[in-house]
Each structure stands twice: as structure tokens, then as C-alpha cells.
Length: 454
Image (tube, rainbow, N blue to C red):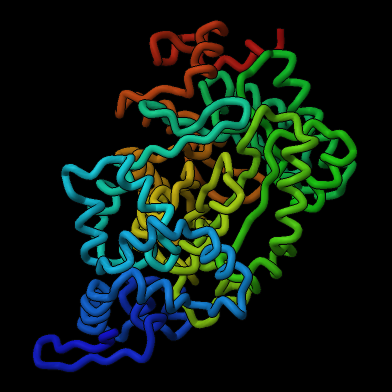
């Protein structure tokens, strides 16, 4: 490996592949906080050049956390398809980028090589791509998955209906639920973030969602986003569980901070397949976000983009129905402003899709970030152009329980209108029967939540 170069009369030398990966990153406040970012633009460009010349074999041989120290590294490495890997291992990162962006490279080509890539390779190619490159590359990839319905269908933009309530009040949850459905939102999942993570409360919320979906014959899937150990106990007690949710990190230590490891994920996955209510076979739902490993002091001096890619490598192991990055949720310590959040959203979406996932994005921000609603709408427009699988749908884009801002029911309708996209087919047919949609567009009756009170 050659870990040095000369640029503008100055020599740059890097100690390791991990350092090259970190310093090739676009500016991220989290990398600066961790003390691993490039010192200036010249060093960043030098690192990008050195990274572009490394081979995919170099990256596989140098994971940012050694296999002997980290189960995430081992899972990612063990899942590599060896014949596919051998066919591309001598490619440079620059050659991988060229292949992805080539006019004659299609989804099937990218789907095949994705099976031979490790997360470090996926992160590396994202670092040498522009924002528009990330959009073009991601748009080519169409990953589908099936729970009760099929997500990732070409020509569709799905949405998670997120009817959160600050006290888990049933009336408040159902009010948001009804309104979201009336705007054609909820085809990806009806997903509730509970305040109360106790088993009785989670079962109560699951039964509330399930009974409503059954009463109105809604073709979708439900999920209560409690800790996965609580959901596992709910499944074992016969609660109506379609999807099993968990936030994940890109290192073993990061996942321990979330209270999980591969043994727990394995147990939940097996239980969901055996005892869950979904048709399947894809019954897992994961959320991620750049900076979570650093916030838990579990980053091993690796950069947040590479660690985020490793989240997707871990997620792939469980064949999930949904994955999304909550891209602006952690705060300005990790993504400082609009520019950083936009870049991270495009990176995450591209890396997830190249890993083979049905990738969505929670295009969001917190009130102490240098961002506003227009910025997040801009990101949603870019991501829709990139073929994003799904977004969040929340009343007025303001989550009153999690206390952050994201995409609204109205935003989903607008994005579908602008890009001539539709809900998932089964859900659209149901919405037409309910009088909410006609020929892929909302009717004058849309938004009338009283439809579901009769």
C-alpha cells in the first residue's frame, strides 16, 4: 500500500488506512471533536487521492476495528461473497467509483458486486464522490423487501407514519394515526416511539395499532420501537408484532452502549420469524445515525462515515425490511450545520443502498442545530431524486415526543407530486377505496381524519 503523496509541493504521509479514511472525509464536526479530521483542505484532498488509489483488498485487510476485537467486523467479513470479492479485489477505489457511475452500469451489476464488498469499501467510495455522484449512484439501485407488503418498488415513495405522543396516550396516538392515513401516509410502517418501555405498555400500544389496522383492513405493518429485548418478550407473550426494531452501531462497543449484541439480535430475529404476525421473510427494522459510536466513546478513533457504513453491513446480516438513518437527530456536535447534514444524508442513503438495503432517511434536525425546515425539505428533495425508499411522516413535521423536526404528512404528498411517485401499490389501492386518493393523487377528501371515526 502507498499511504503518501505529494500535492502542491507538499508531502503528505498517513500512518494507516484508518487515518486515510478519516482524513478523506468531508468536514464533519464529529470527526473534529474526535481529533481525527484533516487539518485543512490540502490534507483532505491528499487523503482522498491516496484513498482513491488503494485497492478493495487493501480495505478488506485493514478494517477500522480488527476482527479479533469486534464482532461487527467479523459479521461483515464473514458475510462477504468470496467469488464476487475475488472478481473485484484488485480494483482501486477510483475504479469502483467509475464502475458505479458508468452509464452502462445498471442495478443488477451493482447488486452483484455489493455482495463482495465490505463496509470499509462502501465508505471509501462514498468519500471520493461528490453529492451529485451519490445521487446518481444511489438512484440506480432498487432494493426491495417484503414484510406484509413490499417496500422499495420502483416508482413508489413510501412513508413511515410516526404517531408519537408525549404520554403514550391512546387518543393522541390514534388522532395522529387517523390524520396521517388520511394524507396517504403509512405504507412503509406504522411506527410508534414509546415513552414507556415496560412490557405492559408496549403490548398495549401494539394492540392499539394492530386493532386499528385490522378494523380498517390497512395493508401495512406495525412496529413499536421499544428496546428489542422488550419487543422480544412481547412476541413471546403473543403480542401482535410485525417488525422488530433496534437502533444499531458500527462497533461492538457501540452496540453494547445500546444494550445489545449479536446474540440478542439473533434471538429476536429467530423469534420474529417463528412467532411474529408478519408474512415475511423480512421482519427487522434498524435505525442508525452518524456519530452514535463517538457519543458512546466506542468509535476506536475511526471516522463517523466509515462507522455508519459498518452499521449497514451489520444490518444486512439480518435481511431487514426497513433501515433508516436519523441523519440530523444527534446534534451539532456530530453534524454541525445544513451543509454537513445534507452531505451525511446523501452519504448514508448511498452507502445503505450499495450495501443492499431498502434504505430510508429521517431527514431531520434538532433545535440547537444550524438548520431549519427549508434545509430539511431541500435534503428530502435531493434524496427523492436519489431514489430514497421512504421518509418519516409526522404531524406538521414536529415530533412532540422526541422533540425534533422532520418531514410532515404534507411533505410526503408534495414529494410524490413533484417526482410523479406513488404509495406502495397495495396501500394506494386501499387509499382509493377509502376515497383518499385517485390516480396517484390526493382527493379533496384527503386530510379528513373523520373518515376513520365512522
